[in-house]
Image (cartoon, rainbow, N blue to C red; front, side):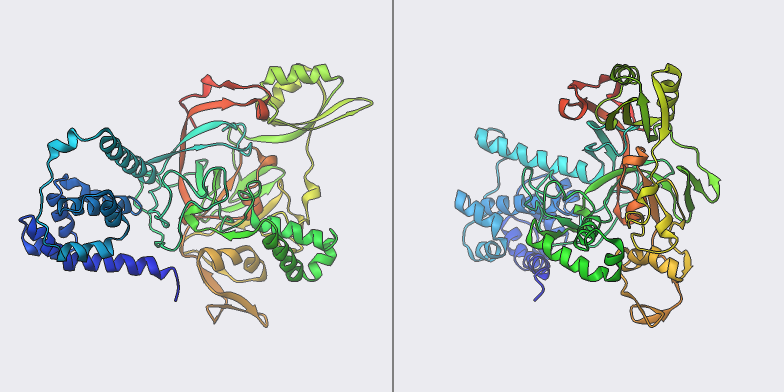
Length: 532
């Protein structure tokens, strides 16, 4: 038996028991028996019986929140029927399937709760009730309206800084109904300080998004569930990174770091690497809504033809104006270390902006991530004797770039030169050429859930030979503003609309630390500033 069916069976059994036993139980409270027999109406009857506000019923449809509310309602209904001891309350909360028939057989009369006693109850009871409602309200806000996120890495540096605390609007694109509602409140996917899952995926719901008040727009700073986050390496340092890139890197190492040997039998080397990872730190799957949260800027919209030429993004063959905060890596030569320090101070740079550093006979060669305005200011200052873009051509042919397969065209792609790529759009039909098969294989197989394979030169989808494919949802192309230090769509491809979480709206707090920046302080000038 599929274990994931057990929670559904228990849920349906509980709903059935409500319809069977609540008519008699509510009749004890003086309510008509038919109220207890009608699904939905019977919960209004329970609220009447325990003398709680009718509007509690409004939160019952919300997954996760309803687990808390049903538990509270069961405990209080049991108390009104005379089952008030601590042991009986725990029994009512944990085993309502057994408690309901037990209450129905009991001769204990209904005892109307006294609201006045709730107000003058013990300090523990008042604190407990306040805590429950704080969890319910905060969970509702976190699920439906907004959530706070932090920026842990420098991939958006220039626009969003490491240590920024973001307000992310979930109502903008429409809040997603939790797919794994059995989860520890306010925790995303692991118990803090551990790699223990904070959720139970036995009980899962299908993807559903409530209406939003606007769609994704180009240049939005978007928070989304990492598309390659459906599998992780169970290690705190690796869990948030691309499992498939880690697997590929390990497999190439097993081939002696010889790409030609690896490409002769990539499946064998990946299987060996997978076995090594599973026996070492371990490999674990994650449901969609528990994949790591990433934040990037939306550069490509559904249906766009995107290309990157010499660092410049082209959309439908027209150059896209770069957002102001976009950074690139430069190799800067300073005649002496003191000049470098003066440059850092003048530009307000921290350790996050500094990359490689090498001293030679002609001075100090430093790798710096700079915006265009910072580069121009450095050039005008006269502190640097040489400023040059970092050459990324050495990343060609490494399988690092999307679609992460060897192909004469794709082997020439690097972070500064890539494409053209048509971004999938709902209703868009493509020819299943060899190139398109490689570009959209994961989209068709994983994000849209089809059995895709190639046999004797023929493409089969769900066992049927086809020559075209029509996409069933929209996709987006996300890139970090710190272009040379961001793992984004250039490395792992498209972001499906199902993975969108919300729009980063403003920074509500910001601080830098000594470990990351070389100095600890609150960045007051960024507090309550909008994300641009």
